Image (tube, rainbow, N blue to C red; front, side, top):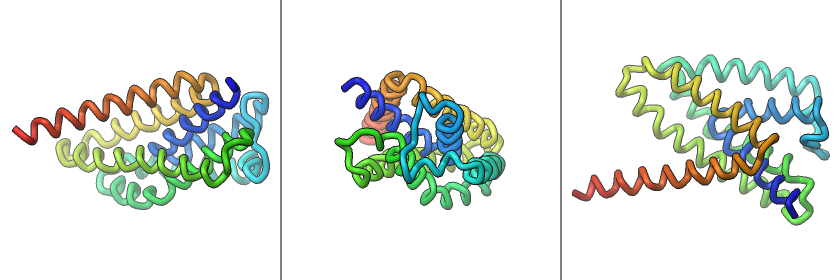
Length: 189
């Protein structure tokens, strides 16, 4: 039971991380499964992530995304493209990391990952144009770097300390809800 809960927490953390940066959690998962299979084991067909070809491709895609996401205007185009990529990455990560749990159907796992990564991406894609507009794009590289660091940290924590990531996700959700309610209350005044 504890192992199943831990696997679900790992899946949630990796999927949420994909909403910020699609390739960071994929690469962390691939490298962890390749070099530390006792931490995360990927069953077929997800074990293809441990292939050197896939790992190399993920490194290239990660470098491209990290570069274009720091350039004002180009980052908005990247977010439009990533609207399709990040939720799919979240779906793959949820399904790949939860596939040891027999009680979760693979389609349900993919839907959960799709929704979670898509939600995080939607929040990011909503906030970033505001930051670009208010700062004239000068804060874009800093915000993008913070997102990359958050994605890396969440990915690593999701594998090493999944319960902590679950608590952090819950805290982030509650803070977001509080912010939304305050904003709505101000608008009604």
